[in-house]
Image 1 (cartoon, one colour):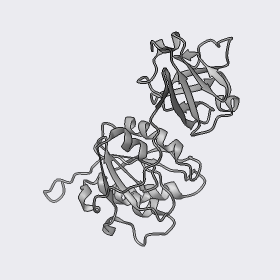
Image 2: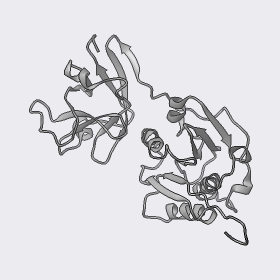
Image 3: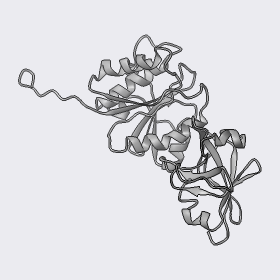
Length: 276
């Protein structure tokens, strides 16, 4: 209570997804911009170490961002370019807010959720001034995230837009009877190849009936529940469902990506028998 009036501070999770790394001051500057407007904001780094200008792996993280902040009323999962001619966007979908440049980074989450609202960030009263031409993460995205966490409604930031950038769909495609084409959407620091396949596409029982993944003329037909299971003498490679729910190709104590000469965005063929 202050002077007989109640003072409320919103404690909302704001998540950061950037390629800024830890060597420079950029991430700290964004956090400072947020905390100067909402000292009670809780900031979570999803990651700050994406390779610069690479958007494909970010889309694989969007699902995990959704899972991490599903219980909260205000979120921010963003890819923060330093500065760009792309329109700055605020997107509401899956009960969350996403802020970032109009470069297609939100394509997959929007495709998956279907129902979204996109707002062009036009109201400069919510920006940090002067707005740098090279640091929109600090001067536009961070202040808008803070304003959202303070309860500002979407309509105050700008007008709705429908012509935002959409990247090529990452939906799994049926290419033949019993065969579907997936993609490697992320390769983590251990060399595990994360595909866009989930249990909706293939089950544990499918592998027991002969399902296999094929990539660069190598077949992977072993499925594990845990990484620490005994090695399969038939193959050093195995599949496993990761914590984000996607099927991964991994290797015991080694990099599956190096073994397979795999790359992000590369197609992977899933073969199922006709009873799957």
